[in-house]
Image (cartoon, rainbow, N blue to C red; front, side):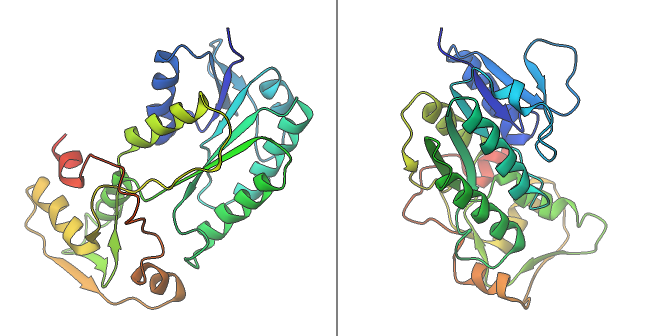
Amino acid sequence: MTNPILVTGGTGRLGRALVPRLLSAGHAVRLLSRQPPPDDRTWRGDLLTGDGLAQAVTGVGVIIHCATGNGRGDTEATRNLIQAAVRAGRPHLIYVSIVGVDRVALSYYRAKLACERLLEASGLPWTIQRTTQFHDLIVWMCDIQRWLPAIVMPAGVSFQPIDTGEVAARLADLASAAPVGRAPDMGGPEVRAAADLARAYARARSSHRPVLAVPLPGSAIRGYRQGGHLAPDHTVGRITFDQFLAA
């Protein structure tokens, strides 16, 4: 049997899609958790303090780092994980990142880019997989406005949402392969205006609220308007936003 795969963020949106795919492929899987439930698969470890990481990474062949604090503590968490992995025998570390972290001036993106740089300089065998935004993010952007009379989206901004399950399938493939460094970006099947995506969301919810495309200021929005977060040459996703909503 091959060495187990450790998944950080295994209970998050991406992790929940990834773990079953790893198990169905015959991999032994460990999940990292600060407060694990009583089962044999989940190992206690705190990425921010480093507590328990040494035990969790011991004997693993691959680490898939899906955990994120949306920028809060991500760099320190990744540094602690890398240090534990280096001491544990240099397993292959796969890091999930975002298309455009080097082109859009957003604090979360800067944190993700810093994590990439740490991995590249770590001496570990590594793979970085950047993806465009998940379908779920677009839904969240609309859901948090449910009490407003209209859905507001940034004018001049498009997104290229991709299905979480398709990203999980790619990560499962990478876990069975040799480290590749920067893997080819993953983009969704369509580049669509943010307002158009919001209208699709409203239709799927049978909502008659109007959608307003509003010009927003700031360097991050400027990066989005310029398409820094898009991967039009890597439209590898197949599930469209409308199909995701219908499902």
